[in-house]
Image (tube, rainbow, N blue to C red; front, side, top):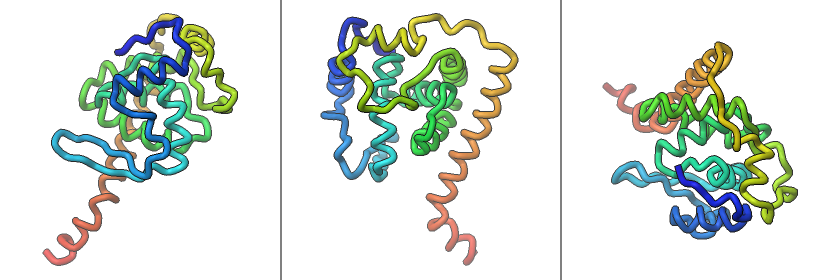
Length: 191
């Protein structure tokens, strides 16, 4: 986890987040997003829906401290799913896929992030233009209840986590199937 000074403004902390992670200006204007998978590079379109969601997502990284490693992205994905992505369908989809990958990497950390999200809020329901980027990290963390310990999960938390974990796996498996169908289909038809 990366910790951003609580007295920094959201704008300053986000700029530091971009710099630390080599994200330039955030890439909101880029046409494509590059994902690194070991030596492989995967490219996906930087759609308007993704850009709308990632503006919040980047601030969430600052507020929660989750980093941009595969595990960090899985943790923030679980946290965002648990605290709700509102009408940001790109966020729901991308977070579900990331959570599934994270369950393989470090199940317990992803579960903890999910339970943390059950007891806090996020910014997806806010009008982005209304978010006070000049406000401090501490103020926004307090508003979203991120300055409090998450407490122990209850039975309902375990049930919800299990349901979302299953949905995350279904999302990932269906995505992989659709992406590789053009490769598999000829092989299946002619073998």
